[in-house]
Length: 360
Image (cartoon, rainbow, N blue to C red; front, side, top):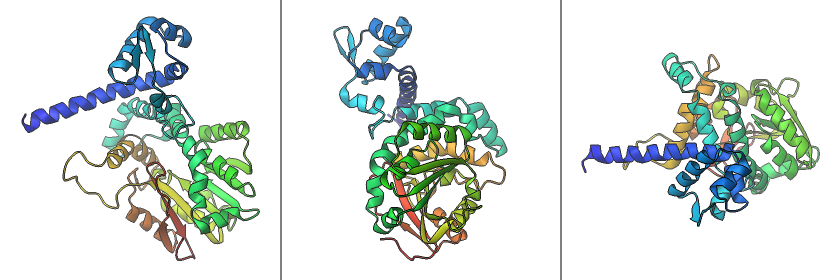
């Protein structure tokens, strides 16, 4: 094949993948995977169990089998246990079916996104709606619940700050609050406060807090990160931003407020995407999968959300290390250190310190 034929073949493969992601959305939203995780189902059995029309149930089940998501045993369709961990187990670190909701949330706003691309304005997180908001919370939950405590315990100085009796911890951009609740469970002697600008996220976080028995004291407040220090100057032993700084229209102002809100010797921890330090076109296209998916998030979700606020710096999802270092320096931090936390999904942890030269 010549280059054009080869690329046409690649593009066709991506079209197939797009349709299959939409089919995952259907299985996730209609509870089909959850039903199949309980055991094999025939067409009529799945339709009855989930309230789906039998004709659509047959088409979906056959499509899932052709796609290799389901297997077939006689007239029954089977969700393999390994696939169930990815598609139907909200406690699994591999639970990624909610990401189909994120893609659909972006796709439904495409007319607004096209207008934003022309004008330089944006599409806000509120406009993307519950699919995006809830998908973010559902995907992050198992990682925060299971992996955040051991990750922070591996960094002695940060762990010591969080372990102080009566320590006060801020979680800025807390979303559904799973990171806040994980911090409270790991450090029961601390007071952990979650802050977010999205009212439905704060409502969801409060609901989760009522449903999940947190070991420590937890609260959630609707607040812009730029205002964290108002009435809270010198209040927090540590402040966190989990996968949210790149969305913020004025990250320097947020980091400055976080710095002012720290006690002497306190630390700000930023968790953000583990992208390369600099852009580079791949020698052998396509490029690195992490870079590709983060640019996808940036094009269709994070950059438009950031630019929906007038005057935004428009960071985008692909916030590279030198960009964060520049923001931190402009916010008055003396150092930025990459923390020795590996394997936490596709994220990197940074410690920003105003008066301590390094974090061990």
